[in-house]
Image 1 (cartoon, each protein chain N blue to C red):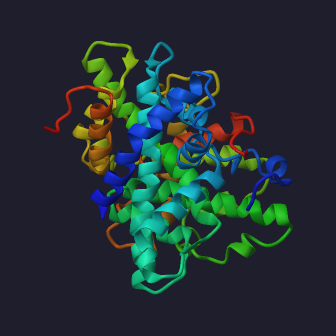
Image 2: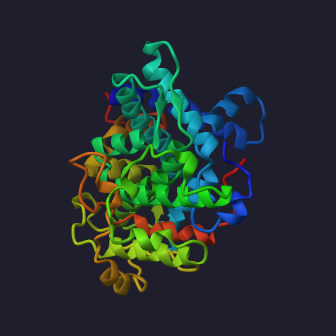
Length: 255
Length: 117
């Protein structure tokens, strides 16, 4: 299955690059194909923005690298979705839920993402709930059990509405920093410190991190309860802190 | 979907805006389920939250892949990340195995001598 996806996208890949080149050259000839391409890939500007966030300021990114990463993102979504889809098929469910996606990620080796994503989703639901004036993610309907599942040390804090949230997020980031179980494949990449104006996160300091890590003790692990026994405990070492970045980003992405 | 709503203002700070467009993510998901799960006949539906999860997951993924590629760039004593660096990252990190065919085909299409014979 994996190979199927990979091959499929790979086959399209060459065409994609070609179409993009044509479009960039000012020609509108392959309009239909270009639109297709648009649909198939994430907006390049967004991808570049994410890339720049983790690269030092003096780093440059060649166009082919940008396009490759862009392709890889689509491939990633397909890869994970395929696995989630199979699960739904097996269990004869019609809808792929967020929980299926997280399950698929942990199945396919991305278990480090599960925890930060659980936190993210949890937060999203809270905001959704607030925006609707309803209860906590009332409409969301618990398709993901774990973030609200266990009594976690962090839960209380993440319930605090409004102004607390940015702070709260740093707390979560800190919990990640404090996690001693750094996953092996993250080797050298353990210190993303997203802070506005400090783009070079790779080796950046974690000034928010340590104190709060002590506070949380890295024990907030809502993402690990319900999914899967084998989703790594804690997880997500390198990744969560970037959540903080949302505060500083302009409203892009809705087209 | 949950696009331009008060959401942007009220929720915009921490939960959104998402770094990647949800509609686009959903389209890609749809395509994947159609290609793979079409056997069942009925098309799979996608919960509104699934793309939300992906929007963040893709950020993590891009960040991780970029860091790994940058490591390859540094190894080559360069400052520009090239496609080959991404390919090297894919080779080096087991997690990215599923991208192998993609980056190889890429290199091939670009006229580099690929691993394919």
